[in-house]
Image 1 (tube, rainbow, N blue to C red):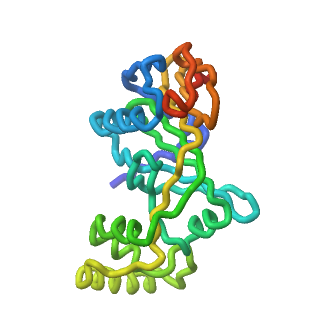
Image 2: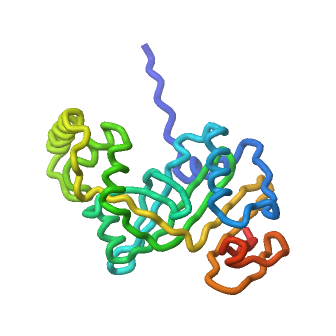
Length: 242
């Protein structure tokens, strides 16, 4: 019986350039209708992403810098967004924890391709109280607790078998002790100094609306043609070229 040869894999460059972006109808965004502060707009866009069926809309990238100022980035989950800022959690002893201790400033990125939208946030980072960090961990699943109890995050593990043994033991402990302590688990808050909302457009007429926190006085609001400042929520809005 004759056998058929499998087709040769496509060169990476051909595969890459064959990909398409936003093969769907994208929503309109009029920046003149945006609220004076970024949090209500983030809440609205997040709800839109959920309604559009965007997988894992709470996934975000977190960028930090190490002690030498070199950038680092990873993907993790948003744990909250309120007037204090954007919340996430990790071990204080992890790589990101050490970086935030040395340089308590970070950037976040959200991407919702089903709507052609991105949100970028930058600002100082503060640690929540131990009670808040404990509550954060125990509001999540058994799996999340087990992961927090497994090994030393970002540390070197000698083998996959060792990882599995530690993970299995952590699962058993998480099930038997649902209120178990993970002392290094820490909830962090990024207080936005800047927040940018990007709405993609099929003709590349992308809308970029940036909010910058104002400290004193007033500044022109180029998104609406008015002026804004602390009396209008403490934010300046600016349209950016795409």
